[in-house]
Structure formats: C-alpha cells, structure tokens
Image 1: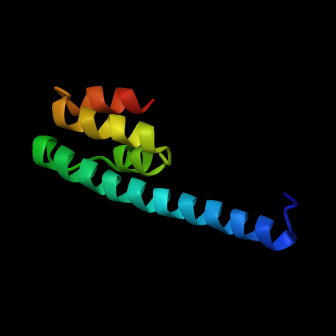
Image 2 (image 1 turned 180 degrees about the vertical axis):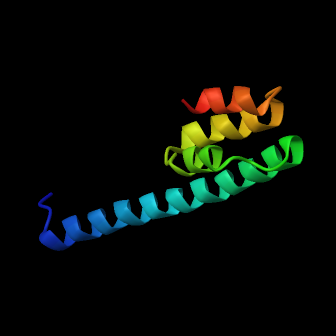
Image 3 (image 1 turned 90 degrees about the horizontal axis):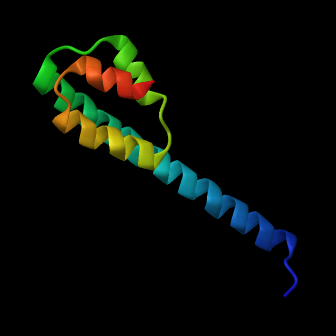
Length: 82
C-alpha cells in the first residue's frame, strides 16, 4: 500500500498526540508523588520536585510512584532519582 503525504501527516499528528497524552499522565502521577511524599516527610525540597518533574518516561514515573509509598526516608527516594 502506498502511503500518501496525508497518511504520513495523520500518523505524525497521532504520534504527537499520544506523546502529549503520556506527558499529561506523567504530570498527574508526579503530582500524586508529591502528595504522598509531603504527607510522609513534610515540605519537599525544590530539587526533589524539579527532579521528579524532569521525568517524562511513564515506566520511570510509575517506579517512583511505588517508591514514594514505601521508601523509608526522603533521602532514599532522592537517591533513586539520580
């Protein structure tokens, strides 16, 4: 089957929308991580927040979500960010 320019454009837009959707989901999960960590450890340092916000990979942010609920200290969470 021959792909037209329109087909390629639609494929590119679809891929871009999927990325934007994933980024939105990552941001929501990052906010949940902040809530969990703040409840457990108090006010978060900006460096922790910035490091979490820098993550765009869904698998990575999900790992951090699990870690936020079970890490013993904020320091251990921060070490996992590096």
